Length: 226
Picture 1 (cartoon, rainbow, N blue to C red):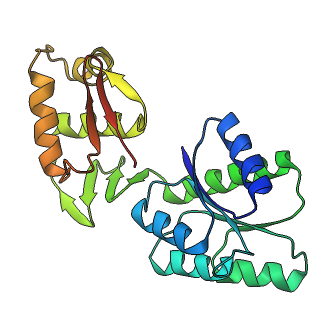
Picture 2 (picture 1 turned 45 degrees about the vertical axis):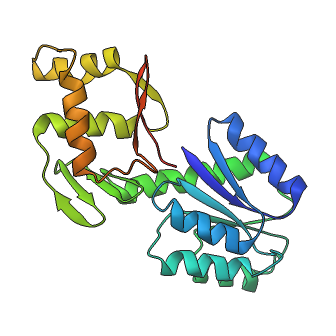
């Protein structure tokens, strides 16, 4: 899982990054509001949550939150702020944030709130997995690329689902064979996976300049969220 931290205070940013990385998160960091907006746009659908400070050096964190929401991005946002007045909290939540945590805070409470936001988001999204411009509906077995429905064969669907569920991790050819091909009752041929990967790349409009499905020579494949 991947979190975007938009925080200019180095001490707070370091504490938050360390806490998240200890729990297995990948962390992207922005020190200004504009950097945060650009990262959120570029990696839309890739973040499991966004941690956002209100007092940033260029623009207000509230403006950042509004611009993220205006971009039709529903990623859970946790605001961090030294302002503890009820009016400030209401303003933050009304701008589009999902939670508001006042500084200074206990790191255990911080992580508990991030975890709660992500649990809630999973319940709301149900069985839809969003990664970059892909939207995989695991109930309807449907794929949308940039909002457009793309038809997949049953095996292509199973292969993509397995890669997406293990995004960020290298999966070996043996793991794919055991978890995808064997469930289809098909024999694994040395070139069969390569052919299916090639066809899948075409269907998801994978770009060589910034690929989603990466070949890891001698190992297997990795689905990248970068």
